[in-house]
Amino acid sequence: MTTVYDDKNKFILRYEENGLEKGSVIDVLGDFVLEYDFVKVLDGFLNEYVDRRDYMGVIYSDEYNVGDEGYFGENSVLFYYGADDNYDIVSYKELYDYLQVACSFYIEKNADQKDLISESLLKIKDKYSIEE
Image (cartoon, rainbow, N blue to C red; front, side, top):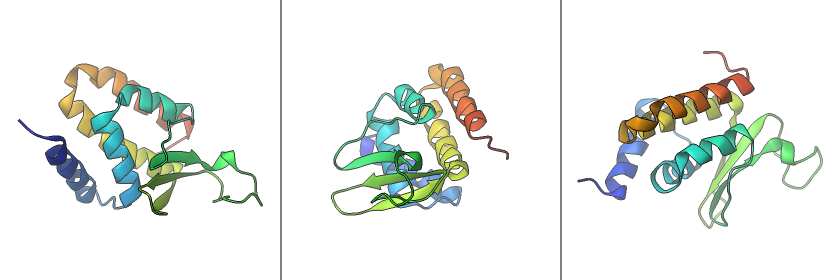
């Protein structure tokens, strides 16, 4: 039997193995995969509205206009985690790369939802015209 702590460490290791090292992105996605309804979370990514908390969340760049306080560029996603100003900004391609790893990890634990997760990830890939 594994604990959430063990799973979180395995989750982080999976990102390291894939050369993905943005800590806030990994922390937020780790919480989403291990502690939330990940199917709903993926739907939130597809609709560009992911639940936020004071200590963690996801913000899409198109929520801001050029010149607005907090503006962080175009076609980007900001992940924040923790009480401090810990955040990482990723492009849509990077978002997809991080989500791929999260989905793979989730499917290993929830094989019965493989088709649903794979379909959601494909929709996200299509939405942002991601090419591999």
